[in-house]
Length: 99
Image (cartoon, rainbow, N blue to C red; front, side, top):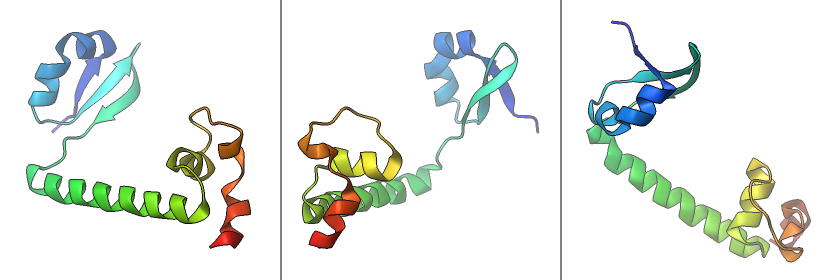
């Protein structure tokens, strides 16, 4: 079975219908893929929420132990994605010794 291909304008205009369809699809711009939608199985959604919650708790705990904000820790782990204050700019590696 071929995966449905959707242009970005169609996705913009029909996002609710496409997402409700529950089928995977490729979002394209000028005929080139820019994104994929793969629905999460309903049976797994509770497990995914539990995993997200556990991950968030671990991140908050680690940030607290390192003396960082969660945002500063995320910037260190995943790359700077948000603006931080000068206090938050201290690298997490410098805080590791405080554990």
